[in-house]
Length: 114
Length: 113
Image 1: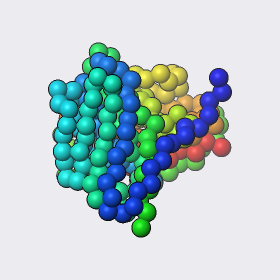
Image 2: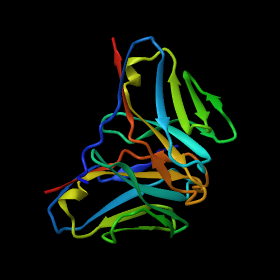
Image 3: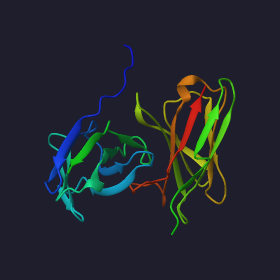
């Protein structure tokens, strides 16, 4: 079929609220997952990662949850700030294919409202 | 420690030309991966190099090629440019590429006219 532009899911939150960004990954064999943040005109910036032997990992203001049963990943951002406005991507690493190739989701546009 | 650097940052070419993009990884990183980012297709893996060897290649035509030097710096080349090659080309480095975080450069924005 005809290729169309990706329609990025969007999430708008009030400054100070918590944000939850979701991601469904495709490969049940994937064993390593990363969240990246990409601001306009910049390359993706590492936020947090998690391995498949864990179901939760916390960083500074961010928490990643992994549910392998339903192949779902989420990123929680506490006390969202204007500087958090960006596109957020999840990425998965499938070791059965190449251990060095990340497959990225389509991204979620987070907008923080004043 | 300096991050991943890419040159040039912006480039305008015409159809049929060829282009070479350069990437310098973080010091000590030996794995370099290249990605293409477009509004239509998102982030797509091009290829990955480690110790001057291409270890994996994505689903791109042979017009896309790359190489890595002994100092881990990498270049990618696109020959016979097409309008659809207009994109942000991102380079990412990691220590060895094995289940590790990849750190991205700012990208090279290529516009093909």
